[in-house]
Amino acid sequence: MNLRSAIHFASAALALAFGAVPFAVASDTIDPVADAKAFQNFFTQKFPKLKPEDFVNGPYSLNEDMHRQWEEKEQFPPYEFALDLGKELFAKPFKNGKTYADCFPNGGIGIRQNYPYFDEKEGKVITLELALNRCREANGEAPFSYVKDEMAALTAYMAFTSRGKPFDIKIPNDPRALEAYQNGKRYFYTRRGQLNFSCASCHVQNPGERIRAEILAPALGILNGMPIYRSEWSGMGTTSRRFTTCNSQIRGVPLEPQADEYRDLEYYLSYVSNGLPISGPGARP
Amino acid sequence: MASTIRVRAISSGETTEVQALIQHPMDSGFVKDANGAIIPPHFIQELTFEYDGKAVFVADWGPAVSKDPYVKFSFKGGKKGDDLKISWVDNKGESDTTTAKIQ
Image (cartoon, rainbow over all chains, first blue to last red; front, side, top):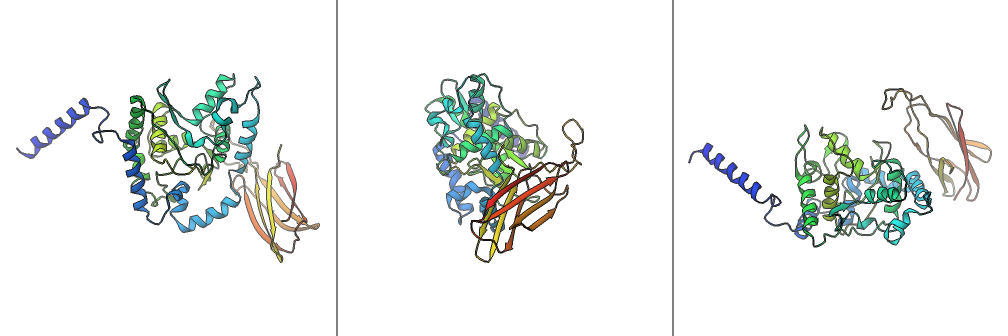
């Protein structure tokens, strides 16, 4: 068989495989537990000096200079104003007299580590941001923008009350949950945009390296610090803002915030960071 | 509304270390909004820290200082429990003042 026909044969076989088993592209079976273990091992082996909980502080754990700057910054963190606003908003009742606390288990305090979760009734992933806006709409209030300002302030406060609690994302025994997980994983590893980068190109292959003046954060623990005050944005941003901005920075067209793909991605990325503590709100350069 | 100024002043005997974070847009006047209209300049021009009736730190600021600025400095003297007065004035004539206890 010459080379050309070998390639033809191989691509035909691939096409067959894709057509026949749509959710088994990367591996034969979906095994989130093994995935998370492999994912965490990859990072701990790549950065043998770091403790698992160091990863939640992103680039600050990877560079000594930045670590010193960060320690100083944390004494007087730039997200303080947002945190205060979040606390105020969270306590303020809606027009009907109810509050956010009525929409969440445990009154919304110390629950960040359980989001996003898979809702078996709806068959979809529910993120904290989505749950907050649904809470507003259910009480007759207009939803907030998903990317910054009030939404970031509210999630900052909710993350702050959950600091130190390990991520505890569950995948229920429901084929749709596994599918959402697998969709998120596929989104994470798929290249897109004019630069043809996947999320993994930067955050798995190159954490600790520079992209222009920035130091790339490891994907492990990257959501634990959300929402973040970014000096580059001179303001707060949510997970939605991080995803959409990442997509436009690789010169792709971002999806709508809280699109199904982003929710699945958040589900996957949070699941593989299970066990790492919540450190949000964070500050990033 | 809560104060726009956050201060922490810690005395170590001889010197007092002061950190402050100020909430202010610090618009330079060179930036356009989403509709293409220029955002008018709006920035702090003078920032003063006073201790015992005397200015210990005065900053003449301009449009190049970033949003929500952060300042850190130390001065000789300052006793635990004493007051430190902080005030700023911006180019629109707006101002804010707060007093912090030295810790």
